[in-house]
Amino acid sequence: MQLTDNFDAFNHYLIEPLGKKHNRAAFCSGVDKLDKYFQAQAGQDARKRTAAPFVLVEKNSGLVAGYYTLSATRIKLGELPIEITKKLPKYPELPATLLGRLAVDQNHRQKGLGEMLLMDALYRSLQSEIATIAVVVDAKDDQARSFYEHYQFIRFADYSHRLFLMMETIDKMINSN
Image 1: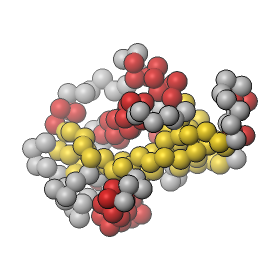
Image 2: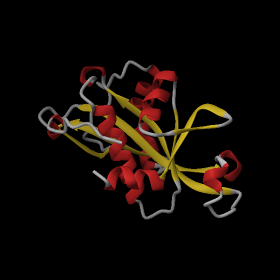
Image 3: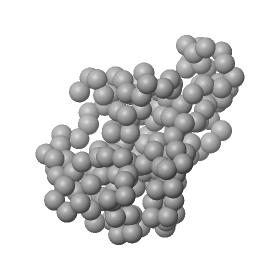
Image 4: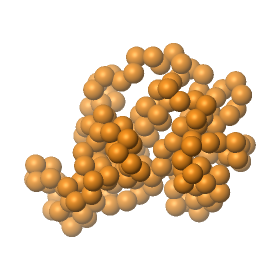
């Protein structure tokens, strides 16, 4: 998997945990559900520790260009393909990381920032001191599903828009670049 070579543009942004200083009201991805969550719920989820929101901030202006959330989830052993489960402990459920939401502001599209957010989320998941076998996503539509499949995410057999990426794959992806 070759990641975007245009990382110079990324020097204009930083990713950090969501804080009070970030203006959430101005954020507009064009997806009402993602915008409403970010504007009204993300701060509360962070305070209550039900999700960890991270924001992509434009360094010069301080504007939020994108965000994603991470939280804990689990995968039922039977939901994974046999070629994967034969290498895993036979627990009924296994720990995973949920990439719950990922959005880029409409004014910052076509710059590779979705990839930047995804790679940061995968890197943080890999570096976590909490055990997790995979990152799981629930793609909101076919376009989002295609985005994740481009980065080697695999569909769960019984859910057309729920996908996963094993930590072993993430490790190879991140540490081979």
